[in-house]
Length: 561
Image (cartoon, helix red, strand yellow):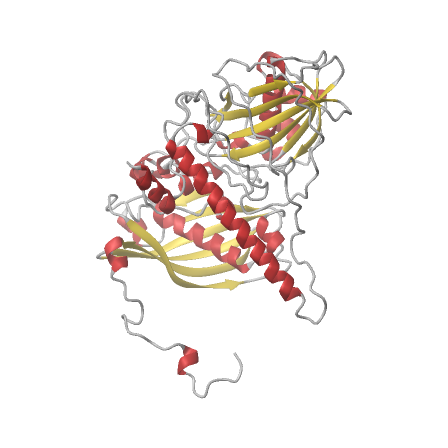
């Protein structure tokens, strides 16, 4: 496959899944090229994280293409946001008053993050630099949730941790410390912050979901005395990274999960030494993802408590999570899940499929997401849900219907899915009124409805065919006004019918959305799967004839539009 082919494929189906990404550490060139200027915190898009490599753009052309694609998309998104802000400002002045800012507060220009030093082979530490690396304190930026922000799988009101709390976390008692949303029925006992009780964090003074210069998370912790040095500093940073991974619930989508570390991080130490006083570690998360396995990457700075000078820096700390030995990570043949896969919702109900599977459905391995029948769709053009903040289905709770069964596809099959709508979601910040935008109502209902037909095998009759999905229309009704901030929306979707025709397949659905058992939105819709040949010869509802618009056909024309 040529580089051009890969770029075209990425353009159609998102980031390509690399099944060997976790197999072994990738070699690092002796003289890597200089890193490109880091994009601003609000614009950076997440890419797959490989705990066995420290910089994905240094490994192979595919990773470089993926990185360039992500940064290009982020630049376009930034330009669109700027244009939208200007338009909102103009609209705000149309009431006769002076123009005024609308929506998000303007962000100051963010400084570029310092480039990470070249990293050695795994297991080695770089030499101490010949000059100090102390830096002034990082500026405080407004915390803004963007469409690209990672949505935590669980949230806790806990913001600080004492020695007793850290000790319980180190022993795997996560729900006892962070609360019921982290309960996994005892299957989290192997998720340990430190091996053999060697905890290097004495206390945690702050955990921020949107903290740090990249805006992706921050942990501020005091270290145990006497002050650790060398590999002890690296391990302390890794423990803080594991803590944040637990805090956002990365382990909750795997059964009997345990931590794995990536290649050796970079370490820089001030030639003046660490000293013997109490130390503070500030960890800033730079990336977090669920594909191909849950993982995050972070940088850390070590200072004296109450001091400003950076005494040491640990870069590219990468921690990932793996399922327990022999534990399945996705559904089996037919989409069945005879073994619970580890995820529970906020009410304690066990889910069939989780956010991990939805992420793979978007841009990863469809076999992991939906079962072995979908293995052939990985790495090629296929039906996928949107990614990032546009993914509006989180979990599948139950499915009633049999994959490949003509009776199920003919109508009557149904499933129940869920979507969490945190109050800090990007669309609540950007909407023009006090409720969820109608486009999100519509999109979450349509995504949930689409899933049942695809899951049951709408395209599996000819799995080698290249088909495109189109929504063909529908109706919807808002049943009542409801505040959806911090709500869990339950989506009940029913497949009404499937009609197969040469080059296409049409499916009709009915759906109801509810909160706390009370419906608030319902409707019906139709989706169509079309072959490339059918799309190439489409003529539309007007059979290819040129039909004037309503305005052109209206006589006399209205004086104003």
